[in-house]
Image (cartoon, one colour):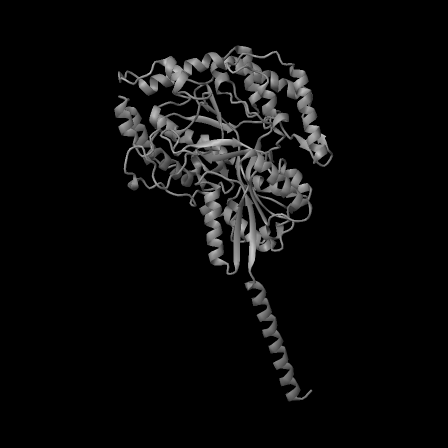
Length: 544
């Protein structure tokens, strides 16, 4: 071959490379729309995160549009939307990205900024798009993104909870990225031996103890869930088997009924204590009587909470009220650690086991790439932003600006709701405690219940004890680390996605049949109710 031929060949090869390169650049710059389906949340929750991440993503990716699509929350509109969306998915379509809570509860703002609701959240029960995320994984609704996740060296996956992340893996393929999770936590004073707690203690064990001893105080703090989370593995989707027995369900329903009946007596004691905390020796003209307060101001069933904001306002806490134990989640455990510092006390914390001694966590929020997505690498790149420190540790959340409040009863223009995002814990759990505690301190500053009014002024109005002001100042100035929450690092045996049955077939529906509003047991046939509930689980598997 002559030098001239070699030169022509080299020129041709270079031109071909340039053409390929130009074609590749043209392909990359072609407009792409990522369709992201998500649920409505509080204005400072996952919606805020999604909007901020979408905006940043579009700024750093030329030609990419992130289109956020929200499921409706009005019942009839939602029913129609879910039917259309499921039909679209079954026909091979659907969104590129799913960004969804895994159960049937949405945490939303109160719609009207009233004095006692501003900054607070409410819970709405809805039909989820995927009543069983595990079943959706089996049915091929999502794409395998394991290659992208495995090769993502900048994600610092060592700080993620490995057990929780593996819940998104099926047969070696990663279909789901868990974003948040929860773990039930049993708290007990280190020097309180009234309740014998072991590493295998379940809520059913505690319920049986309360019933056998008639312990109304223990019954009151036993928030028995209205779902199947007390049981170990519920379903075997592969074999099509229901793993919980009818007798197990009967036992749970019976104990639930008995606990509700026991709580009534202790409720009145606790309500009186709360009334005294609020009004004390106050002689104000507008001071209601106890009966009037219970009738007009204490709305809905009493919920005994472990909350640092409420503690700094009322000095009201499970230990200060003499309860033997408290059952909450990891977020409650964080509040508990801070209050223990103030009280100079210690708590023994451990995961509350499901029946049989299983430590079971639950995925509360997840992301997945739709099976019909044409750009899975780009979709993964968007989703992984929700696993970064900024997103996981509440960095993408507005900081309340109190400087712009012009009057006592107006909310600040940018308000941070109480609690953690989605009321659950980030999967980037190593290093989370100091960052999330900083968020909760901001919420303590807001005061209770007057947003922006200031707890010191509130205490002055009601002639409150200066200990409350001291508690708030203390909580605002302490620092917590991961070492203050060792329960975070307890081994987890199982991580599950909740199974949601239709409203009139669910565990919540069954439990509602057991007691009157005042706690009086009904004469419902519990065995027949358990049989129906068991059959509903079989129907769920068959329909899946």
